[in-house]
Image 1 (tube, rainbow, N blue to C red):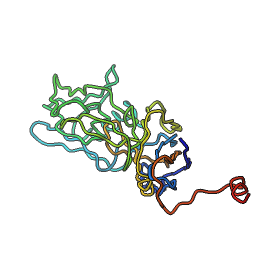
Image 2: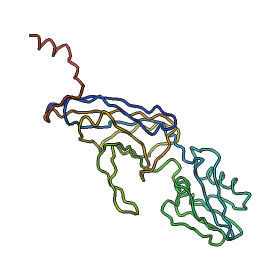
Image 3: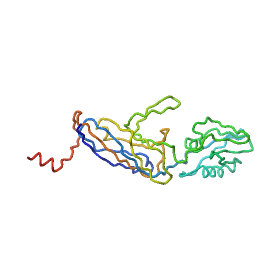
Image 4: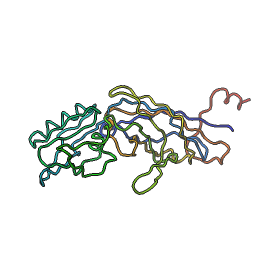
Length: 261
């Protein structure tokens, strides 16, 4: 099959939404094309805790609400526990890390963890634990180790994309995935991920107005603090019907000379 290939590089430009890219890709002159994101490059700088996050306790029948005055990145279990311990000191609630690297809260009074935002649940390691969590022997124990650099897998999704099913409380749902990124990198170091799984066959005109977004393993929004760069290919299907898209492929000198002869 003869194919017209268009290579492209797109990058995010909005500091408030570096995890998102809106692109108007240069498209082939064919009706259908295959889109492949060849690679994604950025730095592993994520805001894992923000001003909209919160943590709620019930202490002796009274509600205790903890909020945050600024965003945080590059946390680990010890630094997160120290932060919570400082913020909860006035409420006589302690926070520490046990020998398994899980976070626990201690209090001399009856204490239960009744609610938390998505980011806080992820950091605490209670993403699969039902709330409320009541104290046992004066200790509220988180069930798992938290994710401190987003989730172990990230996805690049788009307004078009390949089928990828995820199961939640409402059953299976399909997400439009263009790339899967294994989170095998360290904070503030480069992320260089190559695509070996996903490609999308679509109408060529759909590529002239496309959105990309980086999300976590649960397809939840994340906040990236460094620009994201995408390198990809658009392969036109020249066996399909040709349509006019306003794009004329370049003619190199050799083809031009052949036409003149």
